[in-house]
Amino acid sequence: MRKTGKMRMLVPTILAVILTTSVCSAASDAKELTVFAAASMTETLTQIKELYEAENPDIVLTFNFDSSGTLKTQIEEGADCDVFISAGQKQMNELDISAGEEKNPDQLDFVLEGSRIDLLENKVVLVVPEGNPRGIESFDSLAELLKEGEILLAMGNADVPVGQYTQKILAYYGLDEAELAAAGKITYGTNVKEVTTQVVEGSVDCGVVYGTDAFSAGLEPVDRATAEMCGQVIYPAAVMKNSTAVDDAQAFLDYLGSDEAMAVFEGVGFSQVAE
Image 1 (cartoon, rainbow, N blue to C red):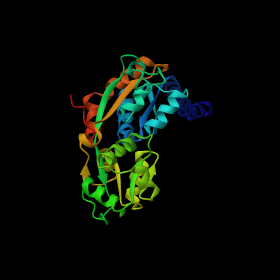
Image 2: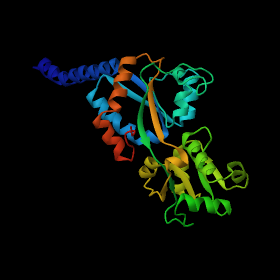
Image 3: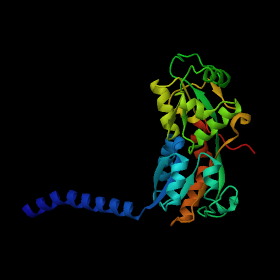
Image 4: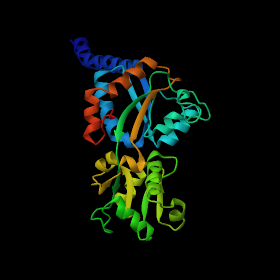
């Protein structure tokens, strides 16, 4: 009887060990995909990760979110990356041999041929702190107040797509960025999240960010930039040539264009690229 009792006590322990071993084995068998993505995709891709891994238990997604310029440099320097999603064409072009020498002067060849797509479109918007203390109502009023030296603007660095779009907007209004920066009228962020945070915290009078980041931060844009001001805001995506799981990377990239994934993207303000 004692032996039987001991055995009964051991059964749950044995089963727990077996289950734990099985789970660990399954986890170790899963393939890891590393996705480098623009910081503005943090919320959407985090949500998509849950959906995708639930449907594909053999895949584990690992994300590296940062400015597209920083991610491009990391890839160029040999970082492991299966899929790259940029917030601008410039950074992808500089890794894509098929973009041509003018757009890819260093003739870097990191993009898997035939995998590159224009995944999403975003909008560049003007946002202000809660209550809009300086009464900034549009890009037109932003330009006038900057000319008068009355406000402090937050924008992305020159190597960040949102910063490059902002530079085009400043040029559209005939504003000298260097002059404004020297006068202390511009402050910078290394990525769009840093710019958004400055606006939310009220440390600046306004900032130029993406519509999706404004949505995620609970900011209501006071104006949206037109294509004439800064061009289309396209997010290209591609599988990298150095990927050790090309088929799985391509499958994930295909999924990002699916109705299920697009519903997540569109929920925060992304849209499919207009033909």
